[in-house]
Image (cartoon, rainbow over all chains, first blue to last red):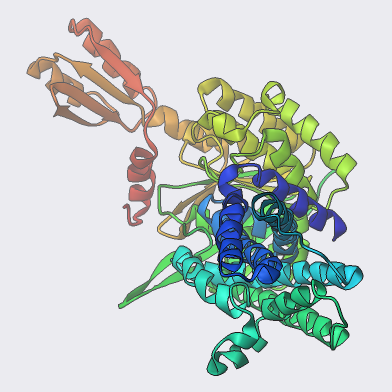
Length: 255
Length: 319
């Protein structure tokens, strides 16, 4: 299992050496400039660190839906899925290893965003709860990788995965609390944000940038992990269903 | 390795059909029975759409049968999938199926890990296989820069990376130049000597004759016959074709009268002579030369020609 997972991580690292696969990281400075500029020029520089978090969440989400979400579809397109299925390696484990790599790489956007905010606007991002911040980041990355594995399965069910990917970008900028904190969204949207693990992560990260106690930290971390785990369970189920379906219909190699 | 015994592949009453919207299901395999002995090189010969690839896919667990039973070394491909996958290597034909942005070595090392081989083993096997298929010099170049024949050789190496007991080769020499195809035949011989069982699909009767212990002819999803390679060789020599240009009509009439000539028709100015008896082609050539015809060529029959002769003679439907 470790061999397969390690190989998947290594393989995805090799696949992501092209700028085209890192477009979300290329866009991160631009999102940072736009979001931080709004805060600074509206006289709320105190909120600028939140904008840095927002730009990061957007990048992480974008890479999850575009790069991770397209993993199985890309294998199907280049004719490697049949050979992959015929190996003893569990497909879900291969996909998870690859989505973990994408997610870890996507976290570089945080470094980018912090640097751009500092250099352009002089904004300093202070972390007041270092350990909680670190744990939140790790749990968010794990949950994101698991969610992305589910997405990779869901997208492959459609022949227009790209449309799905595009449709999931902007709504989730809102639902994740990346652009506007979730509690400030219209009331009817609030229940939806509660099942989006990123909204919990984003709120926790914001709280880590504020002095003072972080309320219900452990519970909120548990929710992030739980929602990620639920996504993984759903992802494994979806992948199993897909494998059954393609083996039944013979549609494995449809591009 | 001891003398192999028993069956590597057992196929009984295998059926596979594909559902279609508002149409009758398309039957790809219609009650196939087949047995491949351990250590045997078995050819599946048939035209496009005969069902060869469907059979390979079912054997390699990427497609479920709709009826019948398939076992690989005693493991059912439907209920004991994991065991089958550990024993089997698959090579699908064509250029697709490799990661173009990775080097040949990286491709093999990745596939090695998917067969759960330790890194050191993967490294060693990758290097050995690259050497074996003649790609050692290009091992660290991206696959997207490879020619079609080189990709096909890498496909072969990928199929072998898991050290399979059963190797399924679906049209493995497509795109190979004659030298590479010859090397491929040598490689198949070596693999047989190692005790591996090989199932190979092909359109090429000469290839089937050269590498296979037995050959099964498939057409329309049905197994037509299982023959030994000698029979294939006989077909190749029996159904030889002669093509001659500028043949006067009186000579053409004489050609048609030669014993063993099945048909002699004009096509775009050439006389195309089909034979169905050993030695007939030689007699036709001799007659043409004596009549002063200078532009003569002979050729092996195509698979379609053989089907017309063999399957037609047996009363089967020829497509």
